[in-house]
Amino acid sequence: MEHEERPYQPIENYGIIGNLRTTALVSLTGSIDFMSFPRFDSPTIFLSMLDSKKGGYFSVEPQLKDYTSKQLYIPGTAVLLTRFFSDDGIAELTDYMPYPNEDGKSVCAIVRKIKPIRGDIAFRVNCVPRFDYAAADHKAVLNNNEITFTSINDGNAQLRLIADVPLQIRRKDGYAEFTLKESETAHIVLEAVEQEDDKPTTNIEHYIHNTYQETISSWRKWLSKSTYKGHYSELIHRSAITLKLLTSIEHGSVVAAPTFGIPETLGGDRNWDYRFTWIRDAAFTMYAFITLGFYDEATAFMNWISGLCTDNKLQLLYCVDGTKCKKETELGHLDGYKGSKPVRVGNGAASQLQIDIYGELIDTIYIYNKNHKPITYQFWTLIEKQVECVVSEWKNPDHGIWEIRNMKKEFLHSRLMCWVAMDRAIKIAEDRSFPYPKAHWYEVRDAIYTDIYHNFWNEDLQAWVQYKGAKNVDASVLLMPLTHYISPLEPRWLSTMKAIDQELSLDVLIYRYQNHLENIDGLDGEEGTFNMCSFWYIEALAKSGELDRAVENFEKMIGYANHLNLFSEELGNKGEHLGNFPQAFTHLALISAAVELNKQLSRVKDI
Image (cartoon, rainbow, N blue to C red; front, side, top):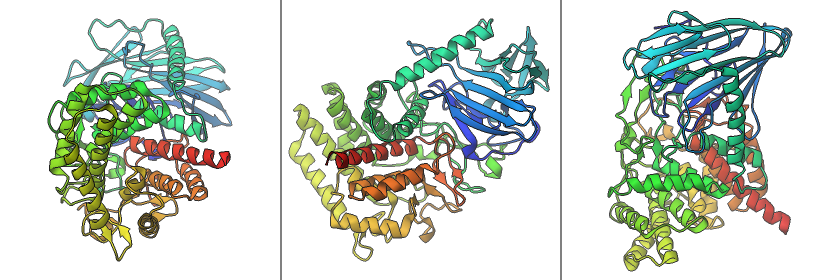
C-alpha cells in the first residue's frame, strides 16, 4: 500500500533511539523513517528511508509556517528532543524507547511527548506501519481510542497505538489532528502486542512519566560506570551510548549498524545489510567498552562468543542470537534511498573466508583477561581451537576486511591479524601458565611477522601494500602500529604514512583504497571516504609523534559529524553522510583515537 510521497531526508538528518533490542531513526522533521521490529535483525515496520512511497513512517508534524528544527539529546542519555522554531511559535517533541528494567525485560515501545513551548500550535500525527519490509498488508482496528495494527502475513506481528488525543483510522493507518495550548502536553505510545491478552497502557500520562524518568536515570546510571576522565569526554560518551544502543541486552552481541540498504554511493549498488554481529566489529567494540570501563558488556559478549567457539571454526558474522546469518536477498519492491537499488537484506559475506577475525577476537580476549578478570581454562581450550585455525590457514588468500566479493588475495590486514592472534594467544597462555604448544606457536608467530615485514613491502612505493604483490596502499595498514606490530617510529612505517598521505588522503578524509586503479571489488561507482579510516589515521599520527597534527585533524574530523555527533560509514563528495547509519566501527574508532590523544596530551602536560 502506497502513501503520499515524502522527500528523502539527508542521512545525517537523523537521530537514534533504542531499547537495547532494536532502534528507530528520528528525522529533523519529527518522523520515524526506519525501525526494525522487534529485534535489530527483524523485518521493518517503518522504512520510508528506503522507499518514500511504500516504506511506512511515524510522523509528528507541527503546523508551523517556514519552521526550522534542531535536535539534541538530553545529556548522558538516548532521549532525543526535536525542536521546531517559527514566527508562529516553538514546539518540542521528545522521543525515547523505555530502557529495560534490571532483569532485562521491557515492552518494545516508542514514546512521543508533544508540547508547544510558545504559542498555541496545531499538530498532525501519522502512524503508517508497513510490516515485513513493506511487503505485507495489515488490518487496523480502533477501540476505545486505541488502534491495533495486525500484519495479515503474520498475525503475531501486532502494534498498538495509544494516545491522550483523539485517534482516527485513515486508509488503515493511524491519524490524529489536534491543537495544544501553550505548555500543554500530548502523549502518544506505539507498543508491541506480544500476546493477545496483553493489557494496554491505561493511564498513558502516568506510564510516560514513570518510563521517562526511569529511562533517563537508567542511561545516566549506565554511563556513570565509565572510568574515563580526560579530553573529549562528551564526544567519547556519546559514541559509547551509540555503541550501547547497538548492543543486545538479551544476547550480548552488537550489530555493525542498525540499518540496511543505505547506499555507499548514491544510485550505486553498494547497499548492504549491517544488522548483524561481525566478529571483527564486535571485538573492536568490546575493546572500546573495556577501555572505558564498561566491563558488563564485555563479559556478556564473552559469554556469547564462548557459545560460538564450541564449533571448531567461527563464521564471519551471525544474527544477534548467534544463529547463522540469513541468506542475502534483494527486496525488488523497494525503490531504495533516492533510487539506490538493489535493496538487500541478509549478507552474502557470511560465507566468506576472512582470516583476520581471529586476531581482533583474541586481542579483545587478551585485553579482557589483562584488564578485567582472568578467563577460565575451559574458555582457553575453546580459544586454542581458534588459534589452530590460524596456524593452519594463515598463508591462505581470503576476502579481507573489505569483503572483496570477486577475488581472494593474500591481504596484509588479514596476515597482520593472524600475527596478532598468535601474539596475544601466547601472551594469555604465558600470563596464566596455560599449557600450549609453545615452540610451534612461537615459530608460526615469527614466520608471520617475517612474511609481513619483507613480502608485503614495495620498494618502489616505499610502503607496505594492500596485498602481496600489490602496487597500492590500503588504509587498513594503519592498524600496524595500533596493534603493536611495528614501532610507530620505524623508518618503514613513517615512509608508509607518507604514501597514505599521497594516495589516500584528502586532508583528514581517508579513502580505504584506490578502487579505481584496478576495480578490485568488482562493483560499480566511486566510494566516499571512510570515517573509521580517518580515526585510524589520527591515532597513528599521535603514536608517530605528530601530536599537534593529530589533535588538529581529530577536531576537524569531528566537524564532519552530524548535529548529534553521530557518524555513518562514509562521507561523500559534498561531505554528506553515506552508508549505514550510525556505524559502530566509526564510533569505536573515534573512541580509540580520542583515548590515545588524551594519553599523549596527558604525557605532554606531565612533562
